[in-house]
Length: 489
Image 1 (tube, helix red, strand yellow):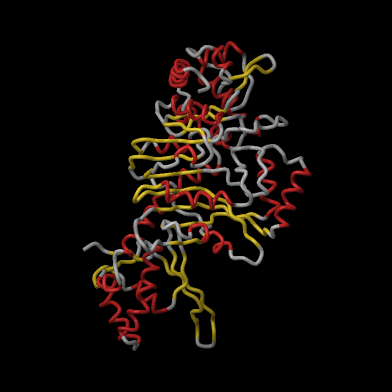
Image 2 (image 1 turned 180 degrees about the vertical axis):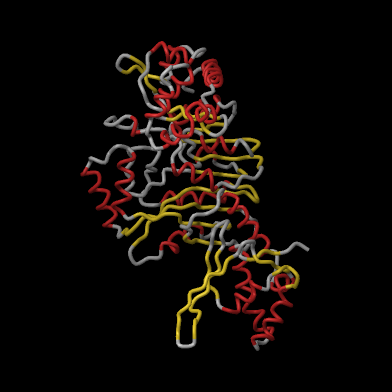
């Protein structure tokens, strides 16, 4: 840990006593100043903390990135001694005062996360090769996408500061966390102790530290950045060429999961000229025997991608590094890089479900609830043959909308296109024909699908058997997307 066990206890006492929590800070600063801090505008927050009481001093040091008088910082951290705070790197001397040496971030209702100071707070100072990230956008994406159901065992691969493990501990009996970086594990151990949690922490590359063990839930925000395999910062660079780390995690998943277990991780994948990116990613899961749902959330062109990651570590002014990286993309015909979420499940079935698709629309949070429900719907569908599907009753999802596009002609409006839209959940849209529209419109939960199709067959002069055969895959797709829902018997 960064501090001794007694030092961690003393720091927790100081933070609690000063109300240095998300709610405590918001209450002290007020809405305007809190909003300013979120935009890195600290002016109002600094005005609200000019008295430099313990809470005000902690806000100025760890939120507003200020250098403050030694006496005020010592008083704010008490009973943690200033000597231990300096030795552990919590604060550091700067000019005639002290400033933050680590990013100590209040998080959630009453948590704290320790990480390295971000590059933006130390302009011109290169990041440590084992830089430990705080709570960034990718971190929040995985937090929101994780299925939060009670499990006995959970694993966080590449834990970094320990943010994912903090969340896992709220619904897992035991949490194991790994990282290649010994430095990251010290931060994670401190985060765990400061929040009164106890995790098993193991050092090693990806799954090596837990070889032969299985878990009910595995999450990972790995070093997924795509490139030539150069390693400069362990939090982003895996040392694997291209997008190989995503495929490697997919291959490891069957040996990591208990029966019914789930694995979720963030990944980047390349879009290669002349190839279908979805087919490329689909190949990662061939032979795994796992259900897989991969959703692409963002796509960046090579220039934007390289700029993003060079800026992230303060290397934006390195033209040679940028040129080498872009040359590698050109040599491998990479047109773009996709970012998304991989969700896998060991269902125990011989016919695993595999979906790889674009989902760029804004979705209703938390995404993890939607992922869990998607797997539930797969189980429901897999447990029913065509006769079981025809015997089921369905109702349209609440709030389902119909959007129409029409053209004015000599005989009035002619409908060109009809689209079903879900205003909540995953907010899917689906173009449909009149027969499917009638099917969804008649799904009120009263009639079995077989009877509903018989009525539609008579109305459209179609043989009932033919309509039932054609409708099976359509109904399954509508259920999978959540447009219609089975009614419990």
